Length: 398
Image (cartoon, rainbow, N blue to C red; front, side, top):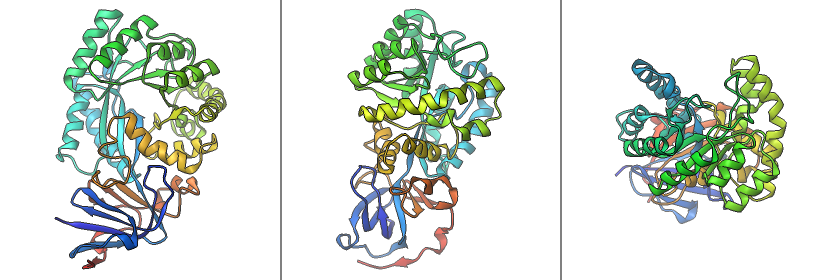
């Protein structure tokens, strides 16, 4: 079995525990064999040794909300083929940004085929993909598997779950995308959301719900949706409801931020609404943090957007360590993969990346891709930054 040891570095393991330094991370094949203070971990013979002194080793990050391909309700057969091929490139770029897992926010059966091909190793160098199969109202905010009323919704949920959805994505409010819609427009009704949540929970699937404003926020919370997405106009009653029901909040601050608006090439009606919403969005996240609400990370962006999300969370009052935990352990937990990844703990997948400096003290370090010197997925080193795996030192320490 091949062994790789990262030695002399600083380890932020994603659990929230203080950083360890100097520390060793020992990889055996595709899993973590040991993580801890350097003196406590003997290295096996024929171990490839990589000295990461002055650098920080972290679990790969989680982007719990990204559109990796087009909305399925707007694609024909060839459109599905084209956008899923494009998604491979996007997921490869995500991995080189230190993002080990991406949850697709508008998933279809075709995306599940892509997910399985990545998981089986048929497609290399990609972030893992999780599929949030989208079930929404006819002409709703997201154009996915359209279903209206209780029995249509039950049928649609059963189809998506039978196809292998990781979780269900739906909508309770309007959004920024369509000129005719407002954030305050109701999408699915409370009755429809209750049926959707009940059907999903009966099959052990969580529900992620797009909800920007009232009444959609209140409907989503009352129905028991597990993950409240966005909340650009989130208010105190919604925050109190999330806290009372112990739901997760995935704010996707990136999507209303200046960086997203500048790079989006979107129509004026979108950018104007996003700009107006951003300060309210940030104030809501700051209040959520003060209330102890479970904050997890998604971006609604693309490769590297998670780094901007972390910076924005810190601006809203989270410590850098709290933001890193949100983007690792907490998001892995809500996505149902914490037993496999999300923290640097023995027996989990060797999914990690190495950065110059200490992001647990200064989160802005992560804003530049040049700060990333190595990315590893399931024990396989990816080319990144200034690191060449072919030039790594080899040792025979025991």
